[in-house]
Length: 316
Image (cartoon, helix red, strand yellow):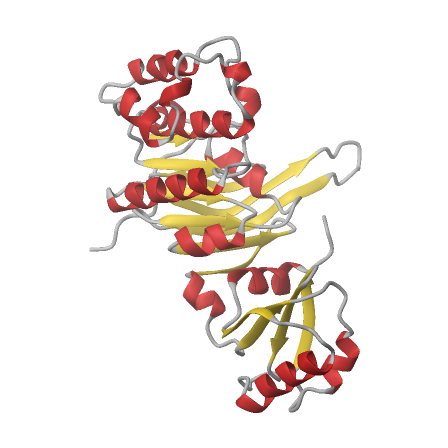
């Protein structure tokens, strides 16, 4: 049996400003999407895409200009009191009480719920046990981030909104958070995740929604969004290789790009996977130019590749 949607948006539109004949700014434009129940949904988009406004509408913090929003089947504004007990929201750093101790804050929020998680156990899972008596203002950025996550989860929500949950975390803490998110999903909790880390979305999400300019540009599972794309060869090398010269050495219409400084991607011609001749041409060119291609791998496009293709490469 299919779980009901945790989140349902139909023609959501939000406009800012606009008076005396001025049209104002449309932050979200007739956006319709679904977040399946009991799954992790990643809401992705570049800066200014409308993600924050969309999530604020879902959390009942902003009233839409038009359209409908349903969270666990309820209206986030008129049913706010009911949803407050069922929905966890990860606060940004500015929303934490800086004058209290970390453990006290978590125990206080836990006491507001009928059947909370054990605060001590949650602190331990997130590596905060040793900082339970530390004033919030004295926590590092990563520690405050983990405390905000604990506060979102302590009430055992049916749905949790996680905004950049691993921003600023070290690798150990990041993996601990990922394991926690997987555990939530295994327990039937719905998760709506906003992140700029495409590898995080690809690892965690069952369903991905990409918005840009306030409109839906793609949705599906990570596998669906990356399926049917040409194979890619990736390697690392010195920054600023001569891509024109390298491309000229490649057979069959293959292309090459420096996706980030010192990281290169060779793609086959549209509709054609890479073949052994192209791989050989790349390694031969590298050898001729005294370049050691580190981390050379062959595979399909990543979610980051698809995201950049959909939303462009220019910084926002």
